[in-house]
Amino acid sequence: MEPHGHTTEDGSAATIGGHVALDFINDLAEQRFQEVDPISGYELLADWAMDAGLLCPPALRHVRDESLEQRAEAEAVFARALDLRQTLYRVFSAEAATTDPDLRDIATLNEELSIALCRRRLKRHEGRFRWSSRGSEIALDVMLWPIVYRAADLLASDRLQWVRECKGKDCERLFLDTSRGRNRRWCDMATCGNRAKARRSYARKRGLAE
Ligand SMILES: [Zn+2]
Image 1 (cartoon, protein in one colour):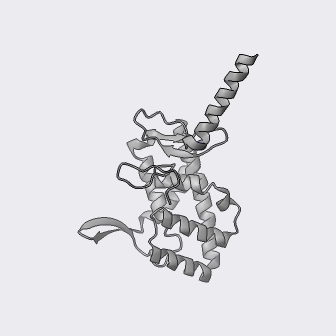
Image 2: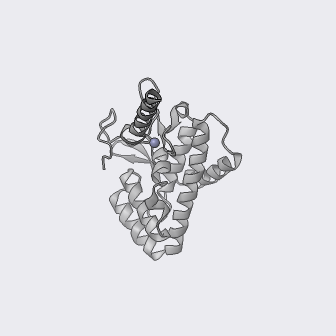
Image 3: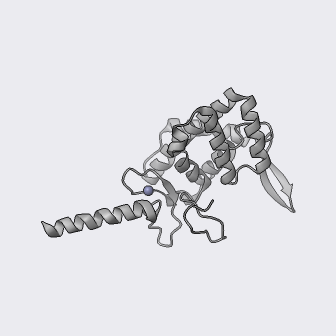
């Protein structure tokens, strides 16, 4: 899916967040994730993970089949994903506002990180090393691991200073500002950017009329 018609320098489709952890935070806030029963929610999460490149098609088929066998476990993973989304949102939002994140959120993130990191393995594939996940063929929470460690990686990197929260009214989308001047304000010019422009122009016209 190519939602906004632009691409990154390497030619891949650009997302609003520009980083998988920020995309996870933005996308799971969408109504389709918030107003869904837990088992359909798990399927949505698995589909999202494949679109985000975190699951290959056979792994997606496998976890979807398994989720029907292990419904309670799948529902628990979905609930955990929503909690993780909230935790990550609060931490990155605080950082974007240059305030200190809540220590409880950092503790929650570290708990998830300990689950995710003990699954990490090096794998040799097509002449180069890649990160892979041990036990990925059986675990229903497989898609949460790379989100957690890539979020942690971003938090501990210099790129954290380029994480921004959209200035749009009531918009909580986060993104990595890779613009040349590091002055991107909106998640998306086509939505929040244009709304802000329209508001400014309306205010200007009112100002002139008065
Ligand atoms: Zn926005």
